[in-house]
Amino acid sequence: MALFHVRMDVDIPRDLDPEVRAETVAREKAYSQELQREGKWREIWRIVGKYSNISIFDVDSADELHEILWNLPLFPYMNIEIMPLTKHGSDIKD
Ligand SMILES: O=C(O)C[C@H]1C=CC(=O)O1
Image (cartoon, rainbow, N blue to C red; front, side, top):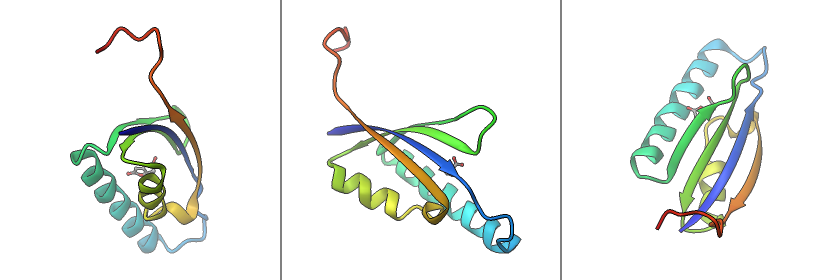
């Protein structure tokens, strides 16, 4: 198991065909929700006032995360920042 904190900032060009935009956003939603059901996309939070999210991924490896992100339908329109996470020594869980 490897946890990653991921920030995605979306910037879809204003001149993108509205039908292509709607179809891409719908595919993104379905892809994201499937990964959430699989437990790989553990958290997704909207950053207030931005077309951005903060997500937590629970995957086997950096390679798996790369594959997931690379296949996001909105990937061509995103800037993505990734922080690998490890357990904090003061955490009382488990
Ligand atoms: O809306 C976003 O933040 C971008 C992207 C991530 C999941 C999803 O459905 O869309």
